[in-house]
Amino acid sequence: MAEQLYTIPVNDAFDTDCECPLCQMQKELETNAIEYTMGPSYMEDDNRAMTDKMGFCAHHMRILYAQKNRLGLALMMKTHTDKTIKDMKELAAKGPAAKSGLFGKGGSAAPIVEYINNLETSCFICGRINNTFDRYIDTIFHMWKKDKDFIEKFKSCKGFCTYHYGILYDYGSRKLNKEQYNEFLDILNEIYFTNMERVNGDISWFIDKFDYRFKDEPWKNSKDAIPRGIVKTNHTIVE
Image 1 (cartoon, rainbow, N blue to C red):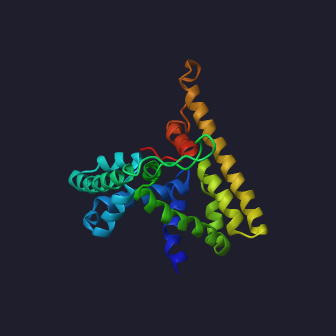
Image 2 (image 1 turned 180 degrees about the horizontal axis):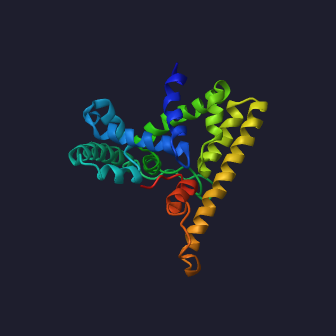
Image 3 (image 1 turned 60 degrees about the vertical axis):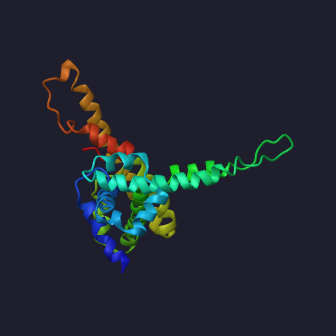
């Protein structure tokens, strides 16, 4: 079953000593998606058709540029820009959208503007990540209902970033019955707030260490407080 397949990366993430297991899952998915995109797959027609259509977001374009396969990136950019030029010339020839209303206000955006807006919100790598990540979220709730050991593992993690806390809070209402959801929320809230306060305290002590009055005090757990705080507040793992 698919659920059994996806339990492996979910369990692996919750076994990791990290500030948000869901961020860890996304980071692993991103690494895999980058490697897939810049590997031999970029020569396959079906993948090239998708990258031609979707392109890449600014974040992932910067990551792709940092990879060693500059020729592969150039080939993808060439066919993507070929398609973009062709499509936009056809749309530009149609002109602006017709305005509606008594004074010519309102109406829909011009076809070329809609095309650009769609292009700006699409990314081949984001699509690969999101498709699998949604299955991971489903797996978390499947395991919550079926695996008591996973519930204990969930309880013992270091919490979640604010963004993924919200994802779990929202999805739980759809994936669990009322009794299960109430139990889940009690545990989720306890884990989230306890660990946010822990990291907040570490950041506070990191700041205090720059005060001459505390210069001889131990750093405690605050030396890496900033990157851990970034995970909690921006769901981004910095290295």
